[in-house]
Image (cartoon, rainbow, N blue to C red):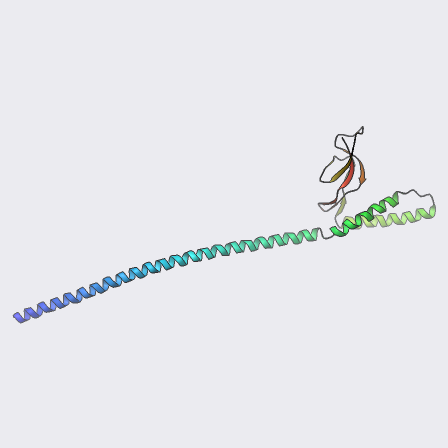
Length: 189
């Protein structure tokens, strides 16, 4: 029986050793998993941070692109709105010369018919300018506005308020809402 007891003891010892070995393997595996988990967490955190940074960059680039599109659209609209500004600016002296020519008094019948023809061309010319959005700046009985008028003389006249326009020396014009030539005026002090 002693042999049985010895074998039993040996088996118990062997079992304990196997259990201890398994426990140690479990502990080392758990430690490895914890280490891997902490490594995985670090890598995950780094990847998450990198993803957040890229997401932020993407949103910024997208916002910049949207702003670029809006700005380009506004510039195109402004270009279309004022596309005729350069030619209108060059035609204003022609319009002034027409008005000067029509102010001349003529007594000859043949010359009167020429003036009537000039008046028709002048009216047609003004209609074309109005269709392009050109408007004459009002000056009659108006108060001086530095955004619309250019004061070239200052006088003291009876019957006019202070800062009121007395006389228009050269007509001013606007293209839609933009002043392309301010009116030159005499202003009462």
